[in-house]
Length: 545
Image (cartoon, rainbow, N blue to C red; front, side, top):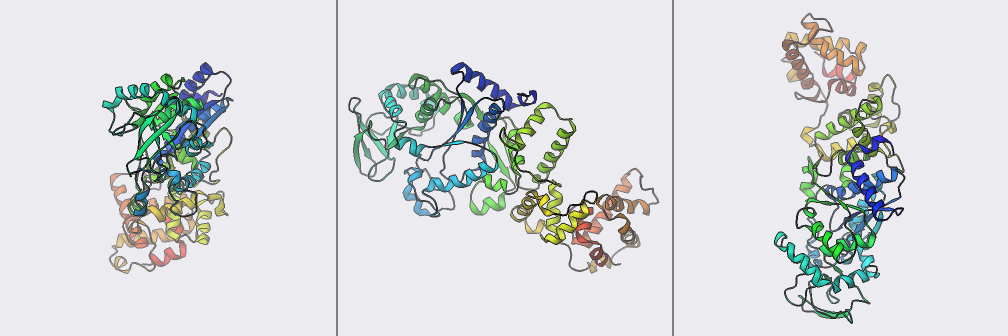
């Protein structure tokens, strides 16, 4: 292991996990775990459930230690509520297992599989390798049967542990029937398929379990031969730690407080299942901004697929890797997205120059690559804001984009738009999805006659100076020099004159004038980019005085 991989939060947690794995079972693969309930679109908050263990597992693999990252799909959980945007008819399926609810688009085996598919695709793009476990299959196949029987034998002990925490819990009703016996196991009704059941009797010797259902049904079966239900969450989680030999897991803040699922599970895994709790880290919330245009219409939180439509995979990984789990994360889909790309590009240049501290280098390395592969990235990563401006100004015309980008990269001309992808396509998607129509920039189709008619002699002179200098300054740097230099010449100052308050004011007025004459408003993209995108011939038409 190189030293640079031990100086960020990932390395510190990996140190603890490897030490704990060696203490428990030297030589056995380390097991990191994640769990997702596919009850609706898997959003960016859920992604942290995967990425925290992923970064730790990947760091462990970088050290040459075998490590498995398990993803338990909690598809045997009940459907608790129908997400916004889905048919009201799904209300009838509340209480049924997610794997038993019909697929809303008739392409998948179930409701659960409908939401797994796009998340799997996003994980693959992000380089996250997991071993999947379907809890439906694990329960139905009898994999957990002995653990379920054990929990039922120790139900009084489980009840006593839960009782100590009940005053700190919300009234979830987990395993707490209105009548009957306490049961940490809740059956799904054989008649209606719902978990609205109460265990009314259980025989330890025969394992015969009897239940009633709030829909008027009743049933019984031998638990030793049939598993048509599941352990309640606070018992199910520690059972899996023991069964899978989990060494590390992360959980949201709602699972991490005193009296929460982890605190209860840590007792139950020792007292009931004879194992130890994993090394555990709680992670904070993930918020989003700038996505109102999307979420407002669909009523859904942004998903990893939404983020990957506008963020390169290494950049999205970096947003999660650079924050400690205890710190919150905000994924911005608005104008701040431009700043995120700028920061990422600056970080890459500093890493290449050797000026970044080891921790930042480690974070950058694990963002752009895993132990197994380097993630795809844009070969010619021009600034995202530049790409977005050009796409906006030329309306996505590939011929015009090729011309502008060739001129923007005159020192090393870019002749193939493929070199700018996928970042170029993500910039186009960002414009389409997250920039409102009145915020986009449209080059005027005809001269702004009204504004041209009101030009002062000084403004006319400035326009003439700009037009006269275009041929000699037709490059990004040259146009920068030109637009800043016109007000200097008008004040009789040399090109390298230091800025004064008066000069800055004149330059701002000149820039505003150009925007008015070219795009019909007082602001716009960087002027060199705007001028190159408009082209010399059209500039001549729009600035003819």
